[in-house]
Image 1 (cartoon, helix red, strand yellow):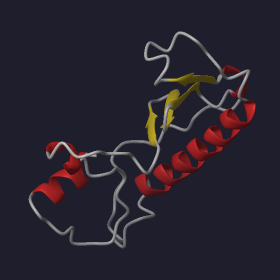
Image 2 (cartoon, helix red, strand yellow):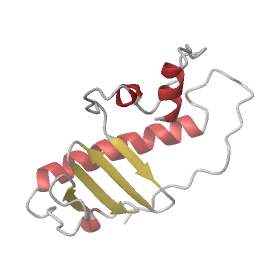
Image 3 (tube, helix red, strand yellow):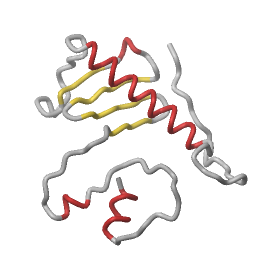
Image 4 (cartoon, helix red, strand yellow):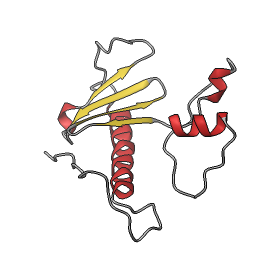
Length: 130
């Protein structure tokens, strides 16, 4: 959210058409109501989280059996896993996360840039499948 927020705050038009992950948080600086339109994905080497509205899906690697779901509005400390009671939501959120993950890999490897000299920064670490 840093890039779109700063660009909006300083009224800067980005010079190209690359995809921007994130949403400007500028309305928060003016104490206006703000509702995120897009989910928030997080990913590390072998774990991920995906926040969509009041729900947070948490997983390790690509292990569907280990997925946890929390209603973070009602359970901010994430103590009560509600995945078993919400299999459709878990499945839908997991599919959205995997779509994001594939898009992030495509971008990291230069697929979003019209530059023949693009060199990826670091090595893409795929989620392990189980």
